[in-house]
Structures are given as structure tokens and as C-alpha cells.
Length: 41
Image 1 (cartoon, rainbow, N blue to C red):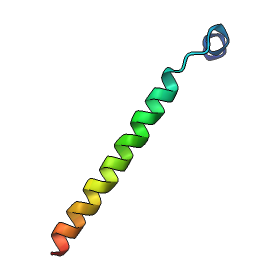
Image 2 (image 1 turned 135 degrees about the horizontal axis):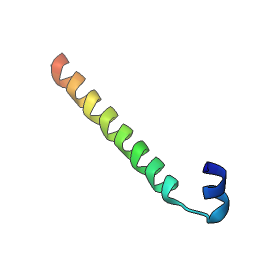
Image 3 (image 1 turned 135 degrees about the vertical axis):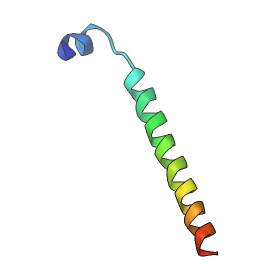
Image 4 (image 1 turned 90 degrees about the vertical axis):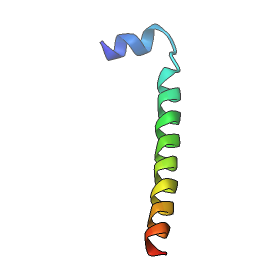
């Protein structure tokens, strides 16, 4: 089923999903770092 979906048409939705995941991880890392610095101070 996955192979059929990939062969049917070049859907780029997974690229957008990966972009959102990476963006979310970056925001989480920034928020975590800011929280740690806040706790240290």
C-alpha cells in the first residue's frame, strides 16, 4: 500500500511534515535551554 502510494504521485506532504517536526524540535530545544538558564539564575 505504501509502495502504491509512492508510485502513484510525488506527494510532498511528508517533506512539510518533516519540516514541522524539525521546527518543533528546535523550538523545544530553545525553550528547554531558556528554562534551564532561568533555573540556574
